[in-house]
Structure formats: structure tokens, C-alpha cells
Length: 227
Ligand code: SF4
Image (cartoon, rainbow, N blue to C red; front, side, top):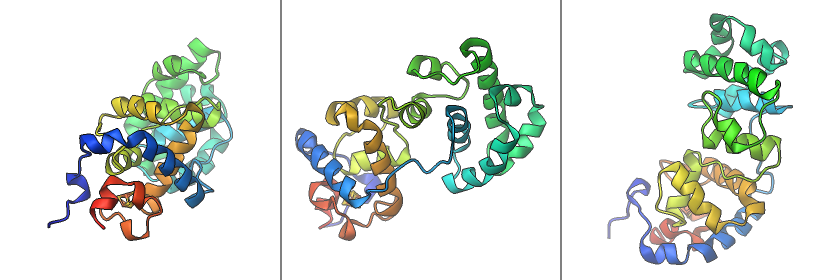
């Protein structure tokens, strides 16, 4: 029988029925596999995390950390980003890609942070998602990692692995976020995102998941198919 490629796999109704039990096992197993799972972006304040998260779109966290090392020395407050000439900020973040759009969004968001939120990055989903360039994923990253507010950040790894593991068939990040919130206890939402991202980078890589060396294979729908 021909083995399905990861991108061809879609969980069936039987897989989804067992998702609640398997989600628990997957979480506890991944916690042992990746005890050091954490956000890979460097930051020391909610503003720094906001900027780093915007820069991380279509860019590696390693590259973002290189760029923010100097950036965070130069720009200390939201006002520094709001005031700088767009072209200057573009040059400072150029190597992260899509730098024109990112600079525009950072400047617009920082102007709003000053005007509407007294210079502080908001600590709730509604206000965060009102900022330029901030969707639910970015907002959940900021809430979970800067403010300790539970949220599931559905990035590309979380979307891909949730499907392969048979936890949800949703590929729409917002629908998936709500589906996973039903499966995972609230206190584990932030760590669950970290674990899936770590696992997606180290083991369940996009082109060729390493199922033979995966700790959650016995709980993973795609992994069981490939045995
Ligand atoms: S068994 Fe592991 S590596 Fe294979 S698809 Fe499942 S999670 Fe990914």
C-alpha cells in the first residue's frame, strides 16, 4: 500500500473521536521529550516581544534574535519606533524580510500604543488585535509569554502537527485554535504551543517527519499509518 505523504493526510472521524484522550497523552509525552521547550525569541519586555513577533513572520527566530540585539539597544520605548523615519526603521530590520510592511506595522502599532494605551503594550486579546499587523497568533504569543495569559498560538507547526496527530482537521488557524482549546486544559495552552513548535522543528519536520524516532508515534494518527 502506498504511504500517504504528510500533506495528503487528513484525520478521519474515528481519529477525531479519540482526539481528547490522545491529546492528553501527546501533551504529557512531549513534555518529557522537550523539557526545555520555550519561546525562541529573545525579549525583555512586552514591547520587545511584540516587535520580535512581528519581525518573525516569514523569518527564522535565529535571524530575528540577531537583528533585535542591536534594535532593542536603539529603540527603547514605543515612542522611539513611532518617531523614527520609516526608511531608517526599514534599514534596521531589512534582513528579516518584508521589511517595508513590518516597519509600517510596527510604527502604526506603536503610535496606537502611545495614543490609546498610555505607551504600554495591551494585555488583552481585543486591544492587541486592534493594533496594526497583530492577528490572534501574534496576540496569543504576546499574552502567553509576556503576560502569562493562556492562549494557543496557531503557527505553521501547530497547524501541521495537529492535523498529522489527528487532533483536528482544521487548517484555518482561528478554527483550529478554538478546536484545540476544547482538547487541552487552559493551564497548558501556552506550553502546548511551545511543545508542538519544538517538535515540529526537531522531529516532525515538514518535508519528512521522523516518525521512526518520534516519542508520540503511538498516539499520532499519521505516525501509526506509516509503521
Ligand atoms: S509520528 Fe511524530 S514525526 Fe510522525 S507525523 Fe506523528 S508527530 Fe510527526
